[in-house]
Image (cartoon, rainbow, N blue to C red; front, side):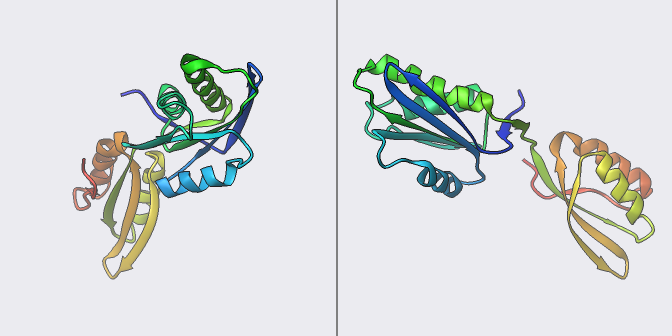
Length: 199
C-alpha cells in the first residue's frame, strides 16, 4: 500500500482561468466537524461558488455548491486522492468572470486548482498508529522508554502501582512486531506488548 500524507499546515493557491478567479484553501483535519468548520471560516459569501471536499480515512464528502453535478466537488475529492492525501479538506472558491467553461472545463479547473494547492502545501507522512499497552518494573522503565523511542512509539499515559508502570502507547503499526520482540527480550518474557486495536 502506498504511503498517505496529510498537510502540516493550511495553505492556499490562486489561479485565473478564462476570466474566472479561483482560490483554493486546504488544511489538515481530524474529523468531519473540523472540515465543515474550516469551510465555513474560508468560504466567501460574495463569491459565485464555494465548492469543497474532504477525505478522512474511509469517510468523505463533497459539494458542488450550484455548479453542474459532478463538475466541482468530485474533481476536488479526486485531487485529494490523486495527491495521496488523507485527513485533508479542500475548499475552492470561484468568482465567475463572464466566460462559461463548460462541464469539462469546470472539472479541469476545480481539479487542477485543488491539486496545485495540495502540491504547494507542506506534506507529512500519515502514520498508521496502533494503540497498545505494556507493563514493566520500575527498574525496566528507563530502558523500555529508550527502546520505545527507537521504534517511533509515543507514551500517551503512564500509570504506576506497587509492581511498576503500565504504559499506554501509540506505535507505528509496521513497527509492532519488532518492538514486541525487543520488549519481551528486555523483560525476559515477563512483559508482553498488548495491542488494543488489532485490525
